[in-house]
Image (cartoon, rainbow, N blue to C red; front, top):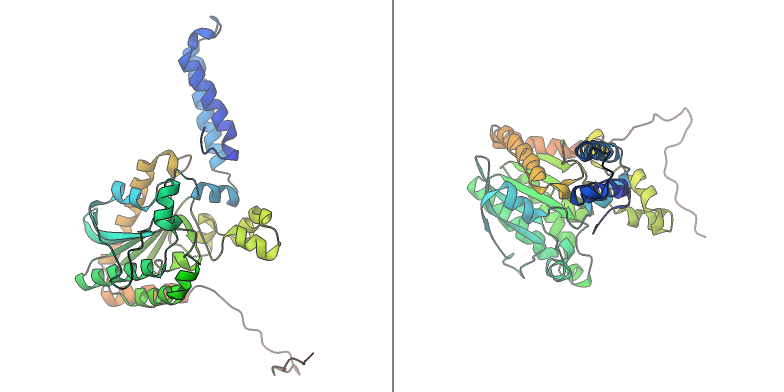
Length: 336
């Protein structure tokens, strides 16, 4: 099977055995009830799937988040939204196809939906820059969000990027400034904002469209300040330590919910979103509509205050009273 993950091997073996039995039932002994054996294998297959996918390690979930068959932003827009009209360009420099956005409808809500978009093959990945946006991508997103705020439309963002593009051109056109401006401006919009991490949520590239009243994350997605490979290269000087880094970073949906960094984990179909894109889209749609219903009932001032308080609450520190006689003066480092 193409794009199989290592932990899926027992599942694939049972699927292969089941397919062979259904295709050539006559090859089996006459003493065997083929129908009963098929039913037994199907039950074992479902139980094996359940046992595997309910006990995945952080690194396994990252592999699922990066699965090439996983639904991307435009897939979810096509399945969960209707009447989508894509808008292009940042009106300053260029059209960045790593960021897509436009008007759409979800449930009873007319919204502005924006997201990062990867490609399915090499040609499309080059066109989409592998889902890593340039500064103009974030400026396009900001232009669309300002338009939504002007017309009183809720904003929905779908996050799936390894990070913003770190190339020379992006630096020349001020990628860090573009992301920083988005963070500031998104905090000030009066309309409801919902962000959903649907795959990879990498660093500032994800946060650039991630300041929201409600942050959702799909069950097998991740959200992190750095990739596990990058963390492993820094701390262990070896990218092979990525699985260890993934566990230490606490970047899976369950850990993020426990830490209070996301508001809801959106369940995926058994086997991951790529196993049933329609089912995954239905779950995401239901969660977004529920939160939109709650947010539109608030006043603009309440939404802004809630968003501000949400992000101000991230991170905690403890103060220690000085011990008697302890000096709190900061000593200058000695020259060596």
